Each structure stands twice: as structure tokens, then as C-alpha cells.
Length: 331
Image (spheres, rainbow, N blue to C red):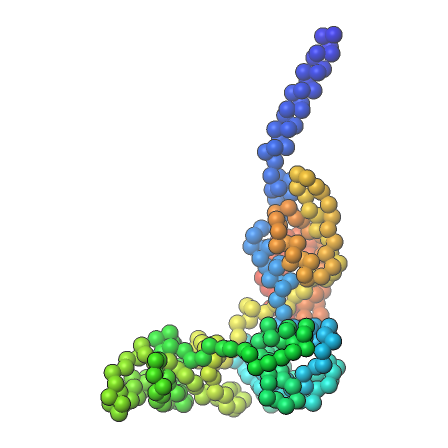
């Protein structure tokens, strides 16, 4: 009988200790330190899974739609060095034809500039139907079209840039048209430095008393390195220009790595221990959007670069390093 009570007591103590350990155990205790997906890495994974350059965005959606392909495309190439080339093609009847015209535009850009632009350098200005009287500029509108086969001239943009928001000089001779905020008045100047004198002349002629705080850069004539003439009018383009006195893009925004599917992650918490198979970017973004601390990749996994490089990843550290240097894998 003594042995019975002794055994029962030991079992009771063991059960209590086990419950205490279990109740205090967190997801981080269950997943080892090497396996833990940090918040920073989670953000990079989701960004890679959800971001598409204009080329991939257009091609992937055009391949899935049952709608007729809009026949006019206006676009441009713009690289981090500020090289720029715009193009326009029409009569497009299929995605295959669009891809042929796109590659012809790439070749034309190379012949004109000597620059071999990548797909990361491509931007859509607008797509349109054959009449050209209605066009689509924003991604949301393009998605609406690809899903519903309807389109309209409903896109809106912010125009002009407040003079007081301009921090750089960019004082090369050009044509700048200024707007008077709250008035229909405009005046012209050949540089930023001459804006104050031009505004003083405007005030004298119109018996007004505006200051530079009332002034916006409404449009600016920009000559590209290959001598294209552009009028910059949107707030986005003007801001881009005044950052470094040219139209360029930030190469750190390049996302030239893609996850290769299917891939597996382990989901481990106090209630379950399961292997989840992910088939596409949407699965990846959704899965990592909830409780990523419960997740651990089943390594190795592969990433595919836009330049055709396959990168084999064996640890979270290797994954974060690859995603941090995604621009390395551009064409």
C-alpha cells in the first residue's frame, strides 16, 4: 500500500510539473531561435510575395482575363541612373502580340539610348481601347477591367508641387509654369531662382500680394538624356525630379526574386503541429499574415531571380540576406 501511495504521489507531482511547463510555454519556446520568423523578415517575405513590377502585373493579369486585350499601350523605361525612353504601340490583339511589341520597344530603346533596360525599368503610362478616348492609368482600374471587362476615364492624380516643398536647387535653364494657389493665375520662369522675381512681376501686374507660399510648380519641361522632351505635371513626377534633378527610380525598390512553389512551412503551437504546403504567392502572404511566430520554413527552399538565377536557401539568415539584396538578381 505504501508503494501505491508513493507511486500516486510521484505521478501527481509529475503531472503538476508538466502542466506548469506547458502553461508557461510560448510559441517562441516551441520554435527554436534559429527557426523563429522575425517581424522584419515577415514584412520582407510578404513584400516579395505581393509586389509585382508593371511588366509582371500586366502580363500575369492579361494571361488570366477573359476580356479582350486593350489595344493601345503607352509606357516608358526608366532606370536608377535616370535613363528614360518612352514608347507607344497599338493594334494589339493578343497577349502574344503585346509581348512581341514590348520586346520591339526594348530593342528600339537600346538602339536609341545604348541602354539595355530591364523589366524592372518598365512602367505603364496608360492602356486604352482603339478609339483612344478612354484610358486606364492606375492598377486598380486595370484590375477592374481584367475582372469585369469595363473601363472608364475615372483615374485621378495629384498635380503640381508646392514651391516650399522643393529642397533641391535643380537650377538648369528650363521652362517652368507656376500656379497661384487659390487663384487661376499662372506665371512662367526659366529657373527656381527666378521664381521670386517672376512672382513680383505677377503681383505688380495684377495688384496682388502673393508670396512663394502661395505658389506651386505646375509643370516643368524636362529634357531626358536621350533628348526626349517631357512635361512633368503630376506631383509624383515633380517630386521624383526635384530629389536629384532627374527622373530616376530607387533601385532598392527592385524585387527581382520570387519564391519557387510548392514550398512547405511547419506550423507549431500548443494545439497543433502541422505541415502546411503553400502553392503560390497568395498562400504565402496569407499564411505569414497571421501568427508568423508559429511558423518555420521546411528548408531548403528555392528563390528564382529575374536574371534566371536559382538561389537555394537553407536558413532564415540566408533568406533575409537574399531578400535584402533582391536587386542583385535583376536582368
